[in-house]
Each structure stands twice: as structure tokens, then as C-alpha cells.
Amino acid sequence: MKKLILFFLFLLASIAVQGQEWVNDESFDNVIGQGGFDDSQDIIIIEFWAEFNSENAFHDWKQIGDLEGVKYYRCDVALSPESKKKFRVRMVPTILIFAGGDAFIKFKAKAGLDLLCPVDVNKMKAAVEVVRRESQF
Image 1 (cartoon, rainbow, N blue to C red):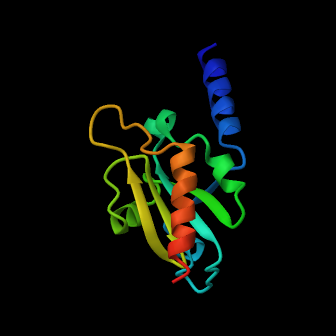
Image 2: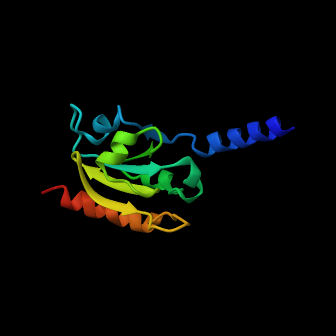
Image 3: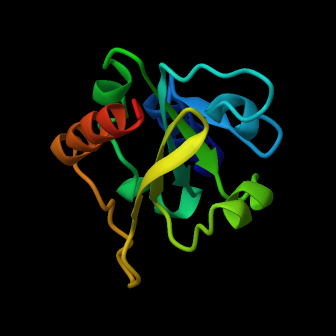
């Protein structure tokens, strides 16, 4: 019975992140535009994520990914130690917004026991517009 319950929990967790795209240490630079291709028209949002704090992840990612010219990814910090180090991720969730390979905005959870998501969907959409405007220069 215990194995059956664990199986259903795993199944529910995999359904919850269905469609979510992931990056890791090997793909990170290519995704943000520093690894050989440059798609400076796109805004790339990467959420540094951890299984232990998945409850506080940015759950409205699909609304952001539906915006024109915006792509949303997650990066599991346990599987991507180099990216975590490179971008000085200390807390999860931490969200970085990139344009043209450069990080423009960083939202990070505040230190404490709750590690709540530092941004809501409206604040994220406003940040995307700021990055879109600023990256034109």
C-alpha cells in the first residue's frame, strides 16, 4: 500500500510540472544566449528551483511563458551546481530574467524558514516589460 501511495504522489508531481522546460549546467549558456547562438529578441526567465521547496515555486509560469517573446525555464539547483554558483543563488526560489545573454533582474526568496516565492504574476509581467524596454539599448 505504501508503494502504491508513493507511486500516485510521484505521478501527481510529474503531472504538475508537465510542459515545464528545464535547464542544467550543460544547457544553461545555450538557453540564455551565451553559448553560440544569440536570440536577443527573446526574454528568458530561469527559476532556480529545489524539490524540497517546490511548494513555494512560481506556479504561474505558464501565464508568463504564454507572453510573446518570453520563455520560462526551471533549473534544479541540486543538478546544476555550476549555474547555482555562477549566479550566486543562495535561496530557492530565485528567478533571473535575461535578455541578449545578460541578466537584468533577480528576484530571490528572503532568508528564513518559509522561502516563499519572491514575486507574483503581475510583478513578473511588469519586470518582463522593464527588461524588454531596457534591453533595446
